[in-house]
Length: 150
Image (cartoon, rainbow, N blue to C red):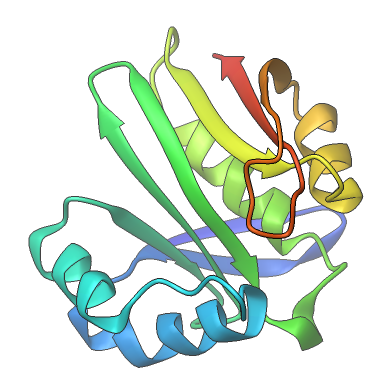
């Protein structure tokens, strides 16, 4: 477990989630992505195998999931509990991950083009759009593919 004191936030605890954290992660998924939740069986399998890693912040206030293949890291999901939003937890998770990766790593993520809060955060952290997928999501929004090189 790593403590991460931040000047603009209380001391945070970030750790890798395991199978026992499945109920907390499932609740966060349902609250953050109600129309497009990860099936519970897939979540359980990912936690069991470790094929996708989940970083859990403050014992369930948020999580970040990602897969690393050599120097390429694909960020899949970033979720914060509704009552804990706008407190810097998403930024803290991203900064924690970036701080744990070696120089030369390439981070990739996808975000809905109309998700202004997420886009602002990613841009503040140095992510840049490298591709746009037209009408990618079920509701017709475009998807922006973003990257950052460390």
